[in-house]
Length: 349
Image 1 (cartoon, one colour):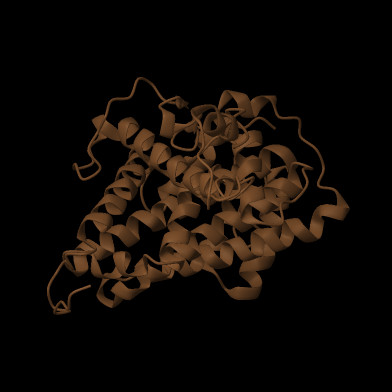
Image 2 (cartoon, rainbow, N blue to C red):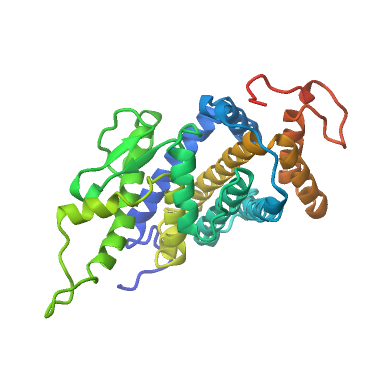
């Protein structure tokens, strides 16, 4: 790569990839803010929307199994810890550090990963021990069952490399350029694009491995037929927003960290990407929390959040404890009962 003055913004090698990621994230975060609320309203807005989602009403509530309690508590504790890291990076624009953008995708993914494991424990599923297993579980047991609203409801299946892919959870989608400016009218088109390109990347890695198997003598690799590709793609779980968050984590950790740091036009541009990630992280953790509440009840979330906030002094998690206390129909122990303690009509328990 030719030498470029670090003061040149953006770095020409990273400008387009940065803009693509920034547009993806801005479009998704903008939809979340529009539908579920901004800032302190986002948490309750997501909880309310997920618990009002008709498929969630069919979930049979069950008590958290004692054998799963350790995985459940550890998942929430670690997930909230990573969520706090993300929120701290964008809490004060006067002290924003652009280089933190190389780490935010990592922290965002691990916040979702750990709370996803807590959800599996609450739903009495086998708790996934690695990232791929968690992605498959969320794709098949959450998204494919329609348990979450948009943007988490969207999915892509099939083989984009052969044009045999299809989308679910979205309306009719049109082609859109990855560098085009995000707008509410193109939200679903952009989600379809991010899911398709994420699935393409995942399948490309898998196809590279297949080409090294059963190689004929005298050859270094074998060719894959259309049937080979489509058959292997059928073994993959639907690609979802969770897969995209994992894609970002891999990009930031393995080879593309400079994109997130050097590709922005200026500090304000870099901070916009960070804020979008923080919104998506907070909302996605909240969505998984709501599914936990549907399965195991809001009390277990309130109690876990109380223990965490008392031990760490976290305001962010204390707000979660208060929210789940209200939804359980009981006031937070540190505050008086009142109108906020009423149970929402949309809650299926």
